[in-house]
Length: 394
Image 1: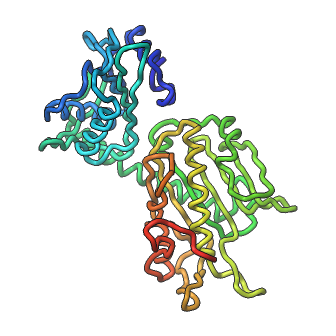
Image 2: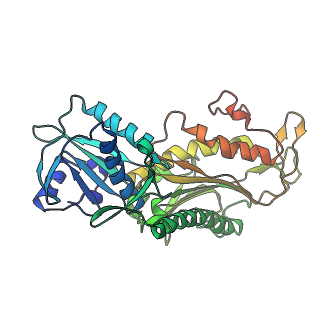
Image 3: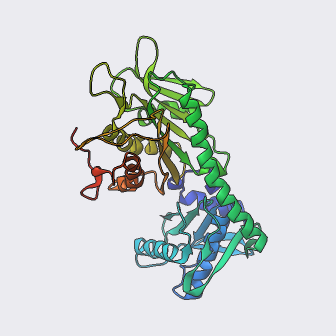
């Protein structure tokens, strides 16, 4: 079985042996290396050349500990090193220090078989921000992979890569703007109870550069990962775009929040009623800014975990928006803030290199949260007063 049709953490020694049995030669997807990567500058640059060439093309695999003849694998010999964990750490350091811009999403595993030394397999995903150059030891070269191996990129190939990277950023922006227009008109998969809302869009890079297709039935089964974190009135349904999970459903069928999991892997979470009035009878005009932060923090880990279970690869773009909130304010110590000067607030996007959001991952949200407070005339989000995010007392 080809390595690219299995989840990387499920690749086994038998899969590597099958490369030999099937005579899978080195091509635009596979590179075989007999022994450990050497410590010389030239050995490291050759290693980085292979990785960046894959990243700048369609991605691929480097198998270390595979003997080959005329580019065809003939024997899995493994990597004879004293400490395989230390060897993997060394390779990670070489990749981190020797490539610009940094490679995102590279995975490295030691795969053991029945006896003998383990092989090291490196998965290099197709990059979302190419071209990458080898910068190790004074090198400044760009490489690209094709069926004949790696070659140095031409001026035209470099120009195409830079243009493609810019186009990718435009596509991410276009997704947010298109979905904002849909939400603004309440034309989403379900009817939202209020026009004012917050929206979180999680856009896997793979959905932009490949024909990613989510297993919709599997996504339906994983509704607990994707659902809005409301305790009551949950409902899930298939639709043309994928699946929709609704929460806080009233008698008329309108909802307080919903999640749409698109078959492309994009996820849209919308939570309504983000504005309130401090006095009965007054129109809602104050933003529930602390709950907006809290809902963002509590929803992202399970949703990203759900994407991982659907075998969607990192990185992902995360975009927080406030929709239909013109003229709103926030309550501060001195009373009320200044009035928001726009209908929608599209906060800066954040990129996550992993879908396993643990530890202090929420530090990455400081930029959009600060921007949200800036929009109301405040210098920063007070939730990061201690460095890490912590919920403010209401």
